[in-house]
Image 1 (cartoon, protein in one colour):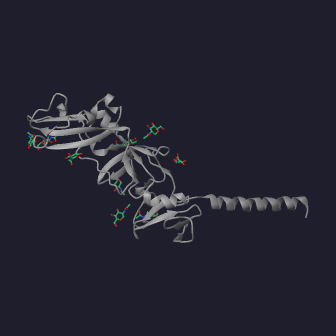
Image 2 (image 1 turned 45 degrees about the horizontal axis):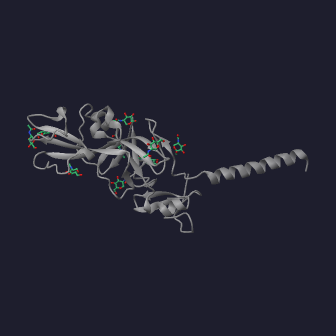
Image 3 (image 1 turned 30 degrees about the vertical axis):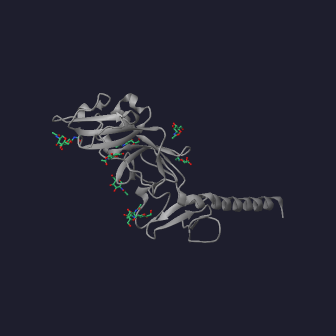
Length: 256
Ligand SMILES: *[C@@H]1O[C@H](CO)[C@@H](O)[C@H](O)[C@H]1NC(C)=O
Ligand SMILES: *[C@@H]1O[C@H](CO)[C@@H](O)[C@H](O)[C@H]1NC(C)=O
Ligand SMILES: *[C@@H]1O[C@H](CO)[C@@H](O)[C@H](O)[C@H]1NC(C)=O
Ligand SMILES: *[C@@H]1O[C@H](CO)[C@@H](O)[C@H](O)[C@H]1NC(C)=O
Ligand SMILES: *[C@@H]1O[C@H](CO)[C@@H](O)[C@H](O)[C@H]1NC(C)=O
Ligand SMILES: *[C@@H]1O[C@H](CO)[C@@H](O)[C@H](O)[C@H]1NC(C)=O
Ligand SMILES: *[C@@H]1O[C@H](CO)[C@@H](O)[C@H](O)[C@H]1NC(C)=O
Ligand SMILES: *[C@@H]1O[C@H](CO)[C@@H](O)[C@H](O)[C@H]1NC(C)=O
Ligand SMILES: *[C@@H]1O[C@H](CO)[C@@H](O)[C@H](O)[C@H]1NC(C)=O
């Protein structure tokens, strides 16, 4: 064999090795990261709710962590309420959310519902949050320690709020006010006013989901099949298994 032939054969071998490495290291074909129109990076364990449809019922990511990117919004739905996700920090596992309802009431802070974190999903309030307790339509004046919200006072009724820890423990609002709502805001955000603090949102932390522990420990990524209602584990080798990438229990092959 002459040197040129040898050269081309080695080149060919190199090429084959290279392309097979490229094949094998192309991980998680079903777990792509993508960017919303507003620039928010959506990566595992979050996924694009707007890419999902009933003809492709499998998604890679945690149930409940689907984000709907549409126009300039990136919406996460938590117990039927909509929150615009403005930041996701993949290093310390935290995200910043703004209540979509509240955004419509800029200048006059008004949130109509409590946020109920559903314990099916591994989301928790961050220690960077503090809580504002709002009382709407109160027929009796509150103690001076409460802040009155003039823009939500009308017809002789007043609305008030307390910064969580400063509220008297024996405050009896029931029967005096129509409604109490607890709103998380970022610690420090209040400097710019209540409305601004609500507009800047609050922080939630997420944890590795308990159900997903085995899959992630085997270098896999969790997902779900919404038609069979089964948890999935997307593995680095392109296979999809049930709860771990180790062992032989085998579900399907990934098709490109
Ligand atoms: C999005 O974030 C993930 C995780 O930090 C990173 O791997 C990926 O490169 C980012 N994508 C873009 C387009 O910035
Ligand atoms: C995403 O948001 C758009 C605009 O609000 C809405 O029309 C669409 O139904 C939402 N998609 C999903 C999957 O919730
Ligand atoms: C559903 O998703 C699949 C794959 O992403 C896509 O090819 C198909 O067009 C989508 N169907 C609808 C009705 O949006
Ligand atoms: C949602 O957040 C994005 C990014 O921060 C922003 O561009 C968009 O205007 C927000 N949407 C609303 C309704 O506040
Ligand atoms: C996460 O890190 C960012 C900086 O990268 C910091 O601003 C933020 O406060 C941290 N969040 C939590 C919940 O620790
Ligand atoms: C107070 O009650 C009136 C009458 O039901 C209602 O229109 C108004 O929105 C309420 N105000 C607040 C701040 O909830
Ligand atoms: C004042 O608040 C009470 C409930 O606390 C409500 O029944 C009443 O309709 C409110 N009146 C006005 C004028 O908003
Ligand atoms: C919100 O939660 C507080 C207690 O944390 C409760 O007293 C209040 O009634 C709740 N408000 C609504 C509208 O459910
Ligand atoms: C899953 O299926 C249910 C109905 O079976 C549907 O309501 C829901 O929108 C589907 N999608 C997701 C992402 O859960």
